[in-house]
Length: 320
Length: 250
Image (cartoon, rainbow over all chains, first blue to last red; front, side, top):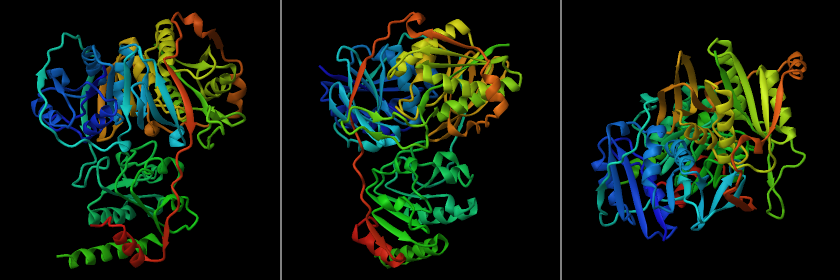
């Protein structure tokens, strides 16, 4: 009997697409029960979204004022309590899940399997180590609950199915007051979200300045793409850190990835190697990014990118 | 005035490319340059700055590992830490075991703050800080990019997928570091000499009072499938044609 509890990620109003990916991973365990836990201040809408994910058998909704912000110290004891009777607890390998799931695991007295790439069996999983330079099989003790985070770039989200029942749960769990949410701010903007976008355009150090980086932003907008950056571009202060793509930033798997002026350090490549099509544009013909690019163009960025934007714009104008 | 405890791990240097052993039984790490895990080096720097600001009295470095890990402790002492503890253990340790050891040390040393790297760059687990905070029943602030202390409260800016989040946590607490928290200082030669005489205590893992029992077996190490180089185009027109041919623009 495999019973899987999936921890839902949300922003207080909408379910994050990471949850549908965790459900896909959970289905590989061939569960007899697949329950999504929604902990929120007022989560009825989020629970309804989770209930429509294909394969979900039940949604456990815990509404409480202390669940307004996703604080690991507050959520973990509630989820550890909900986990009773489950064989597996899964959450996304986003910053939300990476923060929360180890705290749940420790409360349950078990280790955690981080960044599941593939499910080999109910207690056997593939995961990456050394910044993706290797993968290993981890086999867990079948007598213990498995707590794991799911590498989001390795899974596509499930579609929708008939709605599962939503059960309101009241937990008799003491939550701490020693951790307080103060504020949250994003870099904002109207562009698609980097983690879920079908197309991503990233810029590197070769853009030279925040102003130069505008060229990459313009290309992203022409393609309807999310904007990303290499660590070198972030370290140089061209853009905010939440745009960073790579092992130390976001690991993504878009259909189209365009790397502009990015050399292709291993830690960056780790973050993009699951992209369907990788395009590299770089002045340096020896840049390692060309070793993994599906389409490579050696060119001066400040000539090639404006020309590319113009060509794409002209092509778009010709379409009916 | 209290102690800040910093946990560090000895890992293959960040700049060295590590390969899988031909028989898939592990990673070929022997003879490679070893260093302090880079996130842990940032943790040491954060602790030193808090001590220099007067918020804490001393910086205690701890590691769970073999005798060779004393090299990394000495480096941290040379950076400016006051004393060190090595919990003697060999082989791959699971994060829960490390967290239990750190918890035992926290109960013994009563630090006001524990700072750890957000993950080790070898096993990439990213769990130890959160697990320690759970076992210790204290606040956690992971992926910190800014950290200030005011009396009994730390204000931490966290790097999250959606941007930046600010938390207030009561001390004692656990903070894990992200890359942008600081730029660790360089060690000067006189400090290396001075660090040799700083106290370094060794204790066996078994003395910390919990059973060490691995829960996982790790096997079948493989290299990722190589992604071959593709088409090289000469100009923007060819690039757009290639994109159209692959159907990625429609």
